[in-house]
Image (cartoon, rainbow, N blue to C red; front, side, top):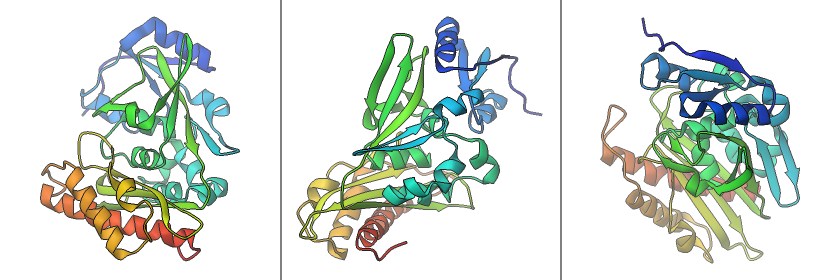
Length: 293
């Protein structure tokens, strides 16, 4: 039997209460909402904490999807199921629905949260790749107020984030730009599994049908979820097409750093990075032109 080390359980009813408790308990405490990643690690004694702080009562405060001019704000306690079912979110960023359809199973999607996924900082995590692709910013609340961290700085290593011991992630902000769309693809060993490799893309076209900007994010190909530098420069100002997508795929394959493990060889993962980049770019552009689903 695998059981966690002894810990004390606390439940909080507001963000200030949670932050104050984290401030008092320091690195001996960890927040828990869905717990589908944290609790298995505790059972295996890969993570040990003296206190677990249950924040499920904060869903009313932090479980939301709100559209503002030029911005989508998503609360950290928003469940996977809510992200999957939000037509408002899918209309602007269909990449979310793509990803949520291949995350785990209904049990996990009913309880797991956006904030929990990002703060777990697993290099294979789907929503981390999505948020990297969309150039998200993360709002972090501490005892002295809020600070906003770009997604590129949020993950600082495997299972490490910019969130301090006396802080919590409260919101994710996504900039909205006109004439754009997005897509997500994932290769997994079985339905709902962690990715062998996954890729997200966001593309924007200008008034002449040329690529105004593009972003690609990969998961499971290195120590962190990776936003691929150079994709935008290579595609910007050019007409979308298969030759251009292939060039982007080559850039993605060269930029990632996969390792051989039980999910596949490094060579195989580079092949997937290349192929999935092509697919998501093609699909995102098709959606802008009203041809994709």
